[in-house]
Length: 188
Image (cartoon, rainbow, N blue to C red; front, side, top):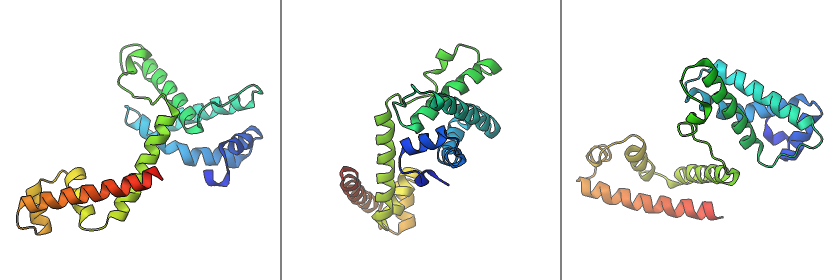
């Protein structure tokens, strides 16, 4: 089961409150990859990510059981925040780094504003869809230049342009087309 089985976050929390196993499965499938990425990018292992995520799920479950508990942000933001805090504590306990938890604040970024995280997700999805809609040769040119780090001369040779200036012109046209597709999709 995934998050789609629940029509809203409130429905998901309600299912979690009643002990519905599908809710736990949905939360794990939907949000564990985010936590795994965070922890493995910050000196952790997959097993440590599983342990931290399990602890965060216990925290969420216990809070959901409290009558006065009101979730004031998205579940994703809540779990990320709890996992992040637990991971920082674990790093401090393991003495992998010397210093206080607060010292890690500048090294491990956290989006404090839920709206900001949601907006970045929407921008990413809009860009992904726009790149998919872009078509060839634009997609290849932009991916080669921005993702693979090819020089304009390498793109010229690969794509068969007569010179680097022609390839640069084509890249510019492709960027303008991508920009138009992105903003048409993102604004709507």
